[in-house]
Image (cartoon, protein in one colour):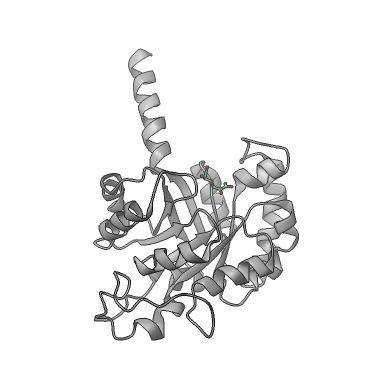
Length: 254
Ligand SMILES: O=C(O)C(=O)C[C@H](O)[C@@H](O)CO
């Protein structure tokens, strides 16, 4: 038994755009319902949703039956939590609120076994096929996507240094937090937010570093992919449910 190749990672490295969806409902059943839609990547969020380790694992199990790559967002750049997420088989991690190259290096180190990093070793777990994957230790680091999230003006100023940290596979812009940092709380689509994100994203793209984001506007998502963003999530399971319910009732009352 071999460690599966990470198709999301191979795609962003080779410049093939990846369309994603955020998973915030913290439910294996809801995840199963969207799993077959055909998204390239699905982000299991533990920062802003009621997910715990067990609900994340259930969703990873569900998604294993589908040709889509799950990426898990830990709630913090926390070495111990990262070890546990990797042991349950997260093929990619999105680290929130990475502010400096040192913090990006800390995120990478959490995903590497010694001597390259600080990941603790478990011999038998879901990630290594319960010790049946003969190549797990030799390949897991090259097959794990390490994505770091830039969410403040301070981080934007160092974006290239953050993106160039050895082991970082991509930089994700958080428009909601960047908007808040700019004094535009609740306005992630405000042009002023994108006026600071776009030049930073271009710098990374010119350096060959994949760039991603999440926007709740399919038109903006399409245009960002056209501008060279590599991995763009264009909505969430939670928003689809809530806004779909709103629209259905509105239609009934119209
Ligand atoms: O700043 C952002 O944008 C993000 O980090 C994404 C949000 O956390 C996501 O929950 C959308 O509201």
